[in-house]
Structure formats: C-alpha cells, structure tokens
Amino acid sequence: MKNPNPSLIRFALVLFCISVTVLGLVLAKDVLIPLVISVFLAYLIYPMVARVENWGVHRGVSIVLVILVSLLFLSSIVLLISIHISTIELNLSQAQAQVNAKTDSLILILESKLGMNSHSLDAYVERISNGVFASWESQIGSLFSATTTTVFQLFILPVYTFFLLFYRTKTAHFILRFVERKDRFIVVNIMREVSLITTRYMGGLLIVVVILAILNTVGLAIIGVPHAMLFGIAAAILNLIPYIGTFVGGIIPILFVFFSQSDPFHMMVQILVLFTIVQFLENNLITPGIVGNNIKINPFAIVFSLLMANLIWGVAGMFIVLPFLAIAKVIMRNVDSLKPFAYLISDKGVERHKVGIKRLRKWVKRKAGQ
Image (cartoon, rainbow, N blue to C red; front, side, top):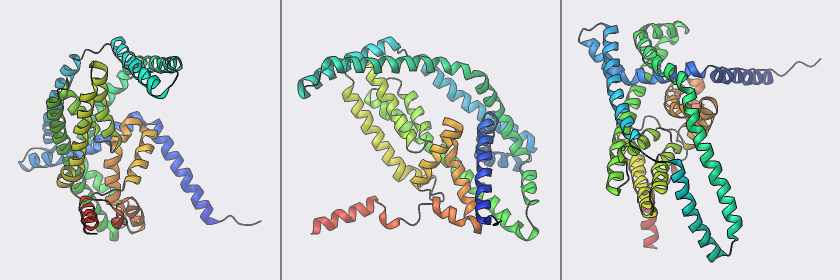
C-alpha cells in the first residue's frame, strides 16, 4: 500500500484547523467580539493608564479612573447623538410618497426620451419601492430583538478592558513561557513593537475620526443639510471601515436629502462633492500625516479581509479587521517563517505601478512637452 504524501496530510490538517477556528469564531462571536474590541480599547487608553501609574497611583485605581473618564466622554457623545436622533422626523409613508413622486417624473422622462413603456416601468418600480420600505420597517423592528445581547456586550467591554490592562504583565510572562530562552529576546521585541505601533495606530485613528467628524459636520452645515452634526459624526465613524464605510457614510445624508427635500438634486451633488474632497484629504494628507506609514496594507488584502470579517462577525468584524491586520503584519514581519505573508499583505512590490499626485504631475509635464 502506497504511503500518503506528507505534504497533502499537512495541507489537509491546516485546512481542518482553519475550518474549526472559523466555526469557533462564529459560534462564540457574542463573547469574542467585545473581547477583541476591548484589546484595541486597552491599547488606546494604555498611555493614559501608564501615566497615572507613574504618578504613584495603584494600577487598579489608575485603570478604573481612566475607564470612568473614557466612559463619561463616550456617554456625552452618545447622549448628544441621541438628542439629535430624537429630533429627526421622517415618516416612512411620507418618504415613500416622495420616492413615488420622483420615480413618476423619471418614468415620464424615460418614456419621452427613450420610448420605454411607462406602465411596465411604473409597475416594476412600485414593486421595488414597496419591497424596500417593507424591508426597512422589518429591519427597524428587528433592532429591538437584539437589545439583550447588545446590552451584555456593552456592559462587558469595560470589564474586559480592565482585566486586560490589569493583567498585562502576567499575560506577557504567559506568552514568554511558550518560547525557549534563546528566543525570548525576539518575542519581547515583538511585544514591544506591537504595543508601541498599535497604541500609536489606535490613537491616530481616533484623531482622524475627530478631524473627519469636524470636516463633515462643517461641510454639511454649510451646504444646509439638516442634522449635519449627526451625519458628520456617523460618516467619520463609518470611515473606520475602509472603502465601504466611506461610501455608506456619504450615501446616508444623500438618501436623507432625497427623501426629505422636494428639490434635492442640487444639494445631493454638493454632498457628493464634499465627501469626495474630504476623502481625498483623508487619504493623502490626514491619515498619512497622523497615523503614519508604519502600517501599509494593500487594497486587495483589505477588501478580502473585510469580506471574510463580514462573513464571520458581520459589521463588527468589518470595524475590527483593519487594526487586526495592523497587529498581524507587525508580528509577521518579525518572524522569519512569516515574513513572506507580511510582504504579501503589504503595499510593497508595486511601487512603479502606483498612480500618485507626483507621478501624475510628471506624466502631465511629459505630455505637455511632447
């Protein structure tokens, strides 16, 4: 009997381990999602905790004080947003009437310009409209069914964060016990780099969100969009989801204007221009200047990770995946056997194919000189 190929056995074992891991992540998501979020929150507030500890305050007291101050700050923001949400009055039946009126005008234009059958178009659009609004109402109702789980996850976040910070030294010693003495220096360097870069990265993301919230709010207020602060903050938070979040953050005020205004198209174009400008500034000036260039991940790795994270943990996974990739890249580029994977998800190797402002300027000059 022929012996099985060891490489095939190893490959099958890896696939089995990956499948079991993914299954475990899906089944335990209600517990693991707040735990992972707490890890990033711990990195975010660690500098403040360390500073309070340096003043001679007990570690546990320092952590509790910083968490309480953070919770007070977040509660103020949530209260402010809740007040704004309570002032929004958009009746779904009125919105559907607005949509039907606008689609009737569009159907007439299509019939006069392209010769399409207005009766067929009207019936098709009405079915879509009724389906969308029926789905919307059912989704709003389903939000309340998840209240218990959501309250548990929000309550457990500060608890997880406290213990992660309180036992951070013990956790480091726990990790070191898994490696041989000759490799401990490398592992210590990895943990220090992960801590340093992730803390700066999370702090930089927070600053970027604040700046984007201000830019979005001011821009929407100048345009005249109602509830500009609410839409500005929401778009800034959604921007944490690469690519998709920017689109969703921009489309929400556009849809609100479309549903609530009798003549919305001029304002919709202004909103589109605003978010295009803000996105350009964020990609080329704000994020590179604040977050830095320590973590550079190629778009393919980001998009693939977003889809997998959404498949496993839904929207929460899409928020989590980019900081996770940042930590994973730091670890992989410090381990010889994992360096190829760090190179794979990085943006290196395609420098001569990139299209940037400087390269575009050189191309324009070269074409102008011909």
